[in-house]
Image (cartoon, rainbow, N blue to C red; front, side):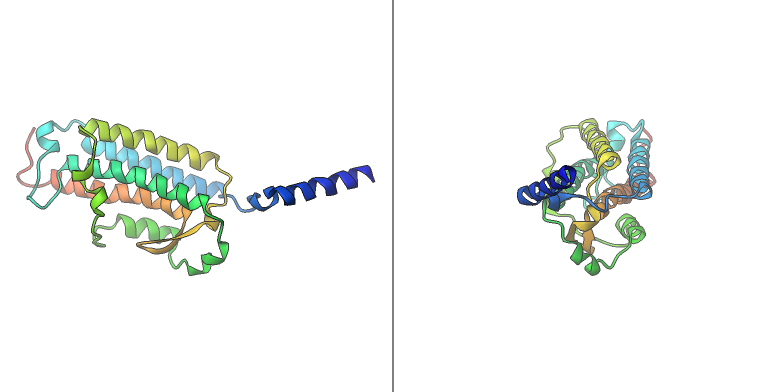
Length: 207
């Protein structure tokens, strides 16, 4: 009887303090975590490989006045790495809204494919253009990307948050907080393609 009363008392305390409403019933599955971690790691590694050994002359080569150099792509990626982290955390701080999941019309695979595809032309927010970067060198921007990506990966590995129940609006329509993580990795892949296009330009410096 005492144990029963104790259990009831604990339940009432949880309800009154609000903790009962914060229990995460649907944390990410092992597969979901692994998919996100794999994409975050691979895209970061591919980015580092794409710029490895490039000289300052090569990093700053612009195919045209309107097109970005490799360095400018990196500056942009450093800015967006921070933005995706802030956006994810902002979404997770909001009250869970699982009822909004019915408004999500895009799958994980489609998020990855559409964000990475350069066929889908998207105008960059002015705050995310290289001109607004405060990073003085390519190395500094790359270091920011590596540091923030490590934070992303550690978060995904350890979180028990129900990321699927935090639904927000995005340029792709309604998505959940987990989708924002996938977007980050795919966005990196998008600009790796751009970097490779710059490197394959006929006037790209030999060194």
